[in-house]
Image (cartoon, rainbow, N blue to C red):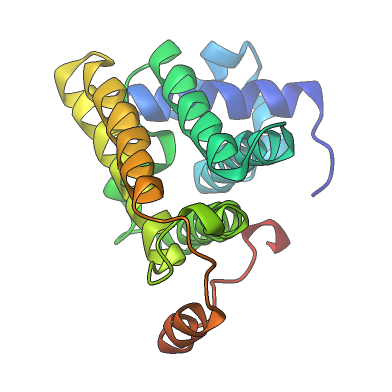
Length: 220
């Protein structure tokens, strides 16, 4: 993905914040330009349409989500602890901003009307699930052998997104705090019942039942 100029970055950051707070449809180009401190000439030099800017916003948010998990995966400690560090990072970063999941807000509003946005967000989430599944597999000796790790990763992501939705509805971080604590407790309970070496057969069978992962969103 080509490196953006400072003006592009300001436009994308301004748009991302406004889309999260008030939605895509309710945000006008003039408002984005005003927030970013750029002129119309600068805006249309970099983005032909508001929709083109929207796709750049999705790419930025996807990169942030991926970087969050990559940083946790590269950290020290055992794999399940690193996954929990990613959960904690998601909780703390979202709590510091307007409540809600930026990608979740866009997906809820635009998945029907903007198929390309839906496909890109789905690909971002698929990449997160794959990376989280890898961390779960690396800590597999602590978990029950029959667990479908990809399904568990999907559950964790769904719980996080649901907690962020509740945080948005309640205008506070309490819900996502509860969800993060619940995910940690769930993994602790699974680990307490695990401790057996995993056989590859349940994972292979589960993988064969699923379609191939969505194409890498970064290739767009």
